[in-house]
Amino acid sequence: MSMSRLLRTSLAAMAVALTAGGALAQDDPTKVGFVYVGPIGDHGWTYRHDIGRQAIEAEFGDTVETSYVESVSEGPDAERVIRQLAADGHDLIFTTSFGFMNPTVKVAKQFPDVKFEHATGYKRADNVSTYLARFYEGRAIIGTMAGHMTTSNVIGYIASFPIPEVIRGINAFTLAMRKVNPDAEVKVVWVNTWYDPGKEADAAKTLIDQGADIITQHTDSPAPLQVAEERGVYAFGQASDMAAFAPKAQLTSIIDDWDAYYVERTRAVIDGSWESSDVWHGINDGMVKMAPYGDAVPADVIAAADAIQAGIVDGSLHPFAGPINDQAGEQVVAEGETISDGDLLKMDWYVEGVQGSIPK
Image (cartoon, rainbow, N blue to C red; front, side):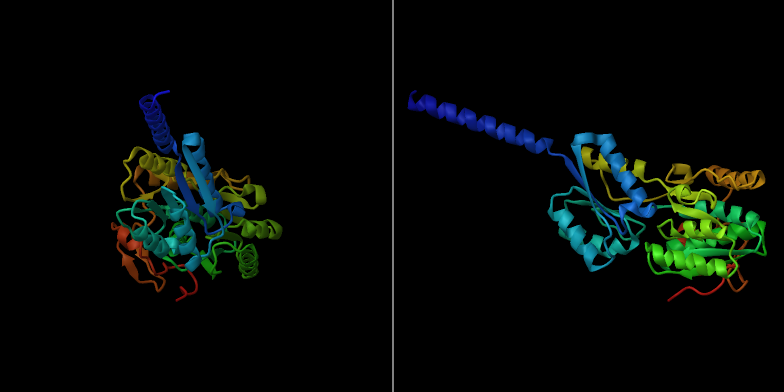
């Protein structure tokens, strides 16, 4: 073989190699990472986010590679995990707890080419979006049911952290409950954790001992429902359908459905249309759903709950429409007025009918 022919052959081989390399680079899967505050087996909040992750895999197959880190503490641990995912070449990272907000924004500044999506927060940037579900709409439905079904007029509410999202849920539940039963009151136990089955169970026992005949929760394990089942009272599930853990006790459950949103935002990264945004969807958009009613729910209560849901969907009912009194009994929202989204997002006060005070 002549030197010139050898050179031409070598150059052709290099071109093929470079082309193949380029094709491989183009065919690399889009990497999507998730950071979870609890274990995927919590059967609640984190479980439902992981169902959304699986929806991405089902939709895109081998063109997308997903990964997750579970049980990440809010704070320095979260920052390290988020940074590692970004450094490992993830194109899109979902951080799924309020306490991940500042770490997400901090890491996003260091990785401007990575897209970040933060659940339940309010800080955004060119490469940081926020998303939230209107869980309070579901709270209005279960509050209505509780108001009809309580006989002790004491409802127990297990709360995680005193942030607006949780306070907003307590208030929506209480307002709906007292519209059908003005004598009913809500007792709140703050457990200062998203997921701790032991603490959640203890809180449920305390509330039942204090007269609660219905338990609801803004924590992530089915432990409160299991206690309700054992003690012969009713309860509502949180984030997913928990009926399997308490088939007699669960009246219904608020279901968080992130699937469509996760698929949509992943598709936007793949096709290059992703932009920073702020989403707050509810029942009407399919992000909040209700589990089937339990056998213990009477027909008239089902009808009342369905009416609330229908009103939310068609816009004729808003859970925070006035008149609304605060905990001291003073009117803070007049009839004909509705609390704005801006004020809902920073809610830090109780409505009338909630016992106790908000921790500082």
